[in-house]
Length: 92
Image 1 (cartoon, rainbow, N blue to C red):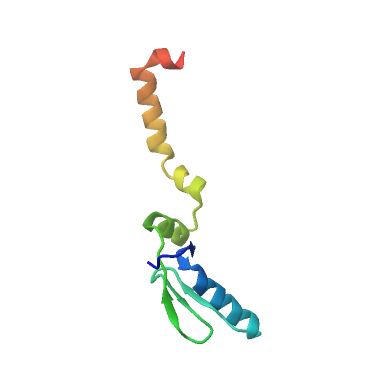
Image 2: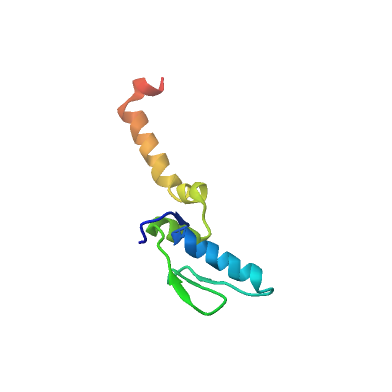
């Protein structure tokens, strides 16, 4: 990874350059391939970007942080039930 700031895992200077290309070329398109972690600029140049594995999985599944946590509702409920049995004084 480059030693400068990133925006969603893409170097800020690259984001700025891509934005300039999009603004300069009316109707230009930008391609984003999340599984391969690449952005294809209007000129066809492919740029790689980094993303945290958990963030990538959530995006690919269309989940935000709350929905992702909701997938663990059963496990959370079991934990809380066990905790109530083990530490009843805490819940009284």
